[in-house]
Length: 429
Image (cartoon, rainbow, N blue to C red; front, side, top):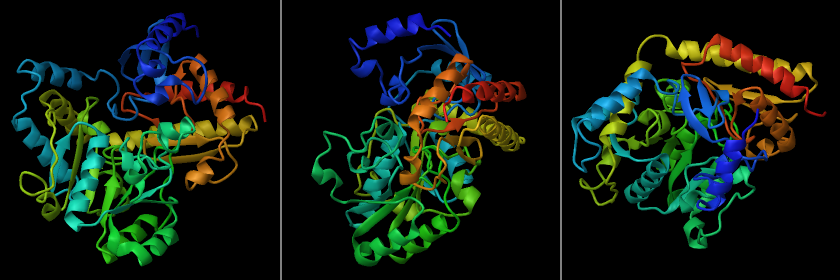
């Protein structure tokens, strides 16, 4: 596949935009080569500026569970935009979206809309600190909760791809109250809380880690977190920005039967437009301004067009057997990719939860950040570029997820598996 226009655009972009991109992982530094500039998307496909088409498994990093340019989303945008694009004042749509979220996520008795997942996690942590009057927080290695200063410690996602687990420009004082522990290691949580529990405001976790590749929780891990945090009056925050409405309609907390104190959402809740949300127990949320003294604000929060897209998406997801179909297609893809690797003698470890999946190029079982880093990034880069040549667009990083949408067809899956068989042949043992 030739991409001369993309290369030219990238050269021009680097003159005006740092690295030529507006988010680091787009730069292909994790796999080499130049990024592909996208012109349009429709259904399960994206089309670059050179006219090449790709089966898309990035889906704007997860939110496009309906696929690209879904008619209901386009209608929602068109209808809402006729009335204006932003008001900085309450709208009926905000209330309706909040009602749907609280119905589908019973742990979120009240909810506040924001503009991104980063805003949601930042605000949730501030609220948890305000509620508990404590400063320390616990996060897990390889879990990414947005580019908040206090959370950029072994943060996974693009930071891992770029080999920058921490960031310059983050003062030491910003992270001095952040305790970072190994994912899936409940003993480490026990040990820390035993000595510092009275000083810890909250524990934030991706219930299914999705930013060091896909790493599911081990049996008993989430249950253990719930018991420990309850014992020490620590606020348990589930970061479901990625898993919310993705692994199940009610997210990972529905899938695993765990009720956190607070939840952050994003991605799908905006139907492809910038939206985030955080919510939790009523008494905690009432501490938030204007009801209480913990301040949080946003001029564009509850943007009417984004809210309309979120409503359209959630109404579709609430009907029929969408999640059963996604499960079936995702399982078929996962099995096919595994067989493609095995046929070619390539060692991989597979992980999947619902319509999120990942192939790690390692012999180790991946259960945390350390084992995720055992993956052979050079092999992934070879695999990535050979899939791209065959019309399959994957994340340009070993440490990201494959996402499916309801727009993906059986034919898409079959083509992807065939492409994987050919791509795996290019990988040297």
